[in-house]
Amino acid sequence: MGTFKTKNGQVQGFRASAEVVAVLGVPYAAPPFGANRFREPFPAPAWTEVRDCTAFGPVAPQSAQLPGAPVWSPDDEDILTLNIWTPAPEGGLLPVLVWIHGGAYTFGSSAQPDFDGTALARAGLVVVTLNYRLGFEGFGHIPAAEATAYPDNRGLLDQVAALRWVRENIAAFGGDPGNVTVAGQSSGAASVACLMVMDRARGLFHRAIAHSAASPCYTREIAAATTREIAAAAGCPATPEGLTSATSQSLVTASDQVVDDYRRDPASGSRHYDPSLYAPVLDGDVLSTDPLTGMAAGATRGVDLLVCHTTEEYWLLDAVGSSAKITTDEQLALFAEDFSLPDGLVAGYRAAMPHAPVLDIYLAVFGDLLFGEYSNRLAELHAQAGGRAFLSRFDRRRTGPNGVVRAWHCADIPFAFGNIDTDCLAFLIGGAPTSADHGLARRMVRAWADFAATGNPGWPSVNNSTTQAKIWSTDDNPVDGRTASIRALWAKVNFPVLSP
Image (tube, rainbow, N blue to C red; front, side):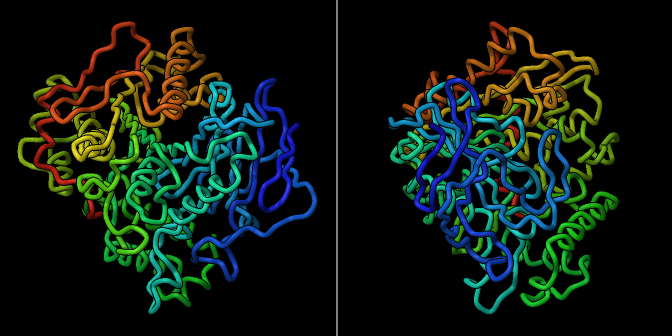
C-alpha cells in the first residue's frame, strides 16, 4: 500500500487520511535548466530504487513567499513535478482531476495548502496537481533565428507534458486515463482555456473547469517588447545568448523591477494598474489562436466546460496592495482611456452602484474586465458553438475579525477543494469557518466531483439564449446580483485584451 509503479520507476507515498494515499513530488519531465533551459520539456530520467515521494518538489523560480507554501531557492532545478491523491490505490478506474495553479504566470505552486487533494479524493476522484515554469522561464519570449529552439509558451508545454504523464501512468494510481478533467484558477484557468484550443493537448483531457480565467493573451510583438525591458533591467542583451547566460535569479529580479517601474508611473498605460508581464503568446505554433476565437469556431465543442468566477474579484488585489489606488474621477477616466473602454461603460457602473466610492467602481469594472466578463464569454461562446457549458458565480461573504471578507479572487478555491479549515487561508475566508461554510464547501466539492465523473455538476447548462448561472453562497436563497444592464455594458468590448 502506498507504492506505485510508473513508467520511470516505483514511487512511495503516504497515507494522507484513512481513505486517501498521497504521492508527492513525482518528476514528469527533466529539470528545465542547463542544456534544457528555455526548451520544450524533455522526458524525466528513470530511476531504479523506490523513490520516496512524501514531500512536494521544488517550486519554479519566483520571488513570491506565499503562506504555507515553500519558497524558491536558486539551487532548485527539479521543478517539473506533480502530486497525486488517490482513494483507490489497489485498482479501479476513477475520474481524474488535474489542477493547474494560478499566480499571474509568475508565482505560485502545487504545494499551496488550498490545493491539497484529500477532500476531493474522498469524493471519488484521483487528484493530480503540478508545477510548471513561470515568469520569464515559462512565458518569456526569446528571439531566435530558429523559433523551435526556444519556443514560446514553455509553461503551457510543461502542462501538456504533465497531461501526457497522466495518460501514461494514472491507471497505476486507480485513475481512468479516458476520463480526465483539467482544472485551474486565474492564470491557471486561462491556461486551461488555452489547452482547450491547442493541438498538442488534444485528446489528453475530456472536461475542463475554469475558475476566474484571466483574459490577456499577448502577440509576439508585445512579448518581444517585454523581453527587451527585462533584458535591460537584467543588464544583458535581448538575444538568445544574452538571455541564456542570465541566471534565473537575475531574470526574476529584473521582472520585479519592471513591475515596480510600471506601478510607480501612472502615465505608463494599462500596465500601471496591475502589471502582468507574462501571458500566453499567440505564436502561431504552440498557441495559434486565442481561446475565445477557437471556442467560437467550434474547436472545443467536444470538451464539457464548467466556468466560475467570483462576484467581487478585484477587491482581493486591492486588499493585498497589488493594484493601483484609483480614488478620483480623473484617475477613473484615465483608466477607462488606457483600456479603451467604450463610452458609457463606467457611467453604467455608476448608475448600478449609485452610492459607491470611485475606488469601488474601479474595482468592479477592472474585476469584470480581467475575470468576470471574460469568464462569461468563455461559457457562452462554447455553448453557442455547440459545446456543453455550465456557468457559476461565487457570492459568499462574511464579516470577519478584520472587517468584511468579500467574494473576492481566490476565495472560491478553498471551498471547491474542501480545505476551508486551514489556518493560513483564514484571510481569504474571514476566520474560522462556520457550519454554513462547511455546507457550502461540501456542495462545491460534490459539484466538481460530479462534473469530473459525468459532465454534469448539478444545474442546467448554458443555452444559446439564456445564461443560467449557479450562485454559490451560504445564503439559503442566493440570487444572481449581476443585472442584465451590467452585462449589456460589455457587449462592445472585444476580448481577449491583447495590448498591455
